[in-house]
Image 1 (cartoon, helix red, strand yellow):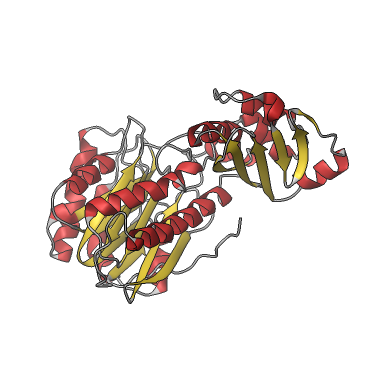
Image 2 (image 1 turned 90 degrees about the vertical axis):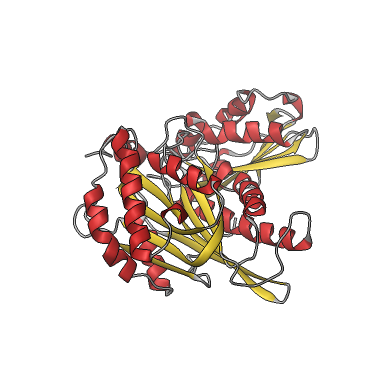
Length: 403
């Protein structure tokens, strides 16, 4: 796929900030704030893990309440998860402090955390830093850079992007940032993502669009098969573009959904590129499927196979592992109709070896970007899952994560 560079996600009507408050060692940034000038329509999608952070509980409740949202406060370095009653008390105290500093209702503030699970959040450090964080709010690209850096954990690089389009004589902007490189697996959003738009849209329609966009992007990536306790993607739309309100089933909705999906796909790809210890960016495409569900189950089986992922890291041309993972998906298909290609090199034709020369296959395996295509030849549906290889460094990073 074509990878987009980090583009400043500055959106009219939004201010952001990021700084270090002392959760992380040294002067590393670990606290971010996103603020809309006016109450914004808001929507979110959250982890399917039954063990969730109090921040997820707080934000779900806030989004379910009537009225708009104005701000999102995010900390990194600590997940504020599995810490007992203190977790929700900290959410309450932090959002109250942010509300006081911004002079807005507490119910209009969402909260998210990311980092180590099971360690009490040093909320006093956040509370002490909030006034300084509010003073740093700004609209410049440097503000977005600082905020994106502040939500990182094991990420090697910040992840930002923006998509623009014209509708109803107005310039619509959809921008955002994300973090994630481990504990990444499809079943919602599988990371943290914060998106903003100046489009006029109601909260219900916004939720419909976000769910659809996440399904084609964040729900189609996997690094290690684990959902975090804190995963969420939240979007705020403040209506600053003053376009006619976007409604489902209209051309305006289709254009907005296309832009939002493009943004989400770009951010999702950046997460996979930044997979912990990853050396390969891998796209698994299953086509010729009878249903999308069938195609997805097979693509996900290949993308999550530890044997496939380790073979990719070792550049071992053991394509039998791919076909084995296809068969392990629990989806029906005809093995004698299946074709498998790796970077356009035919490995399997009608379920039988294509006798590709080992030299060609080895050359294909050495590339950084790997495209695995599986054609089932039983329909017209397709699905793609993005993944990466499984390296020595992944084990090292996660073996030493809390130390």
